[in-house]
Image 1: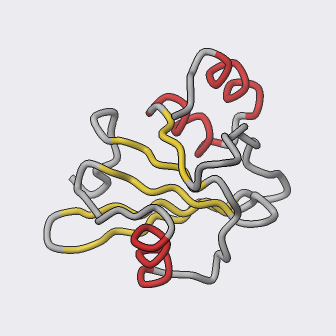
Image 2: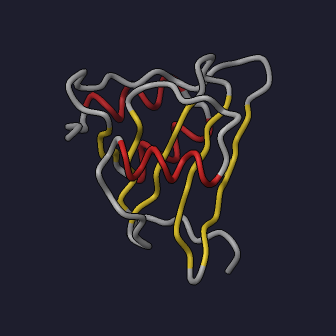
Image 3: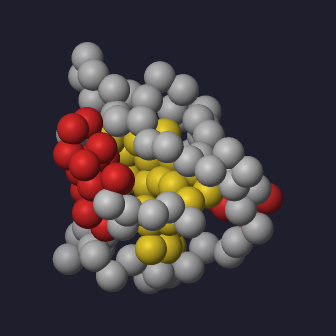
Length: 117
């Protein structure tokens, strides 16, 4: 199996925009310094850019790291509401899928039923 992003993982969303020029090292630095966490195979770290047209997902798989990038043409990823005091929040797999697809209305419906940590 190539893509191992599934429903059993924890999706940790960064609550502020990130410079999308960052790659593995820069995003790992955010996970360590801002979140105070180590990379775990159970977690997927989700980052979005300032214009919300690019989404990056960082995941530890096996002996290495995988970085997924999703870029939308002409539209933005939906904006989620976050607790301003936290640098990250956990979102459900269903919310992650709708977010990654760029489905604004479905994300709003899903997030109204979802409590963010």
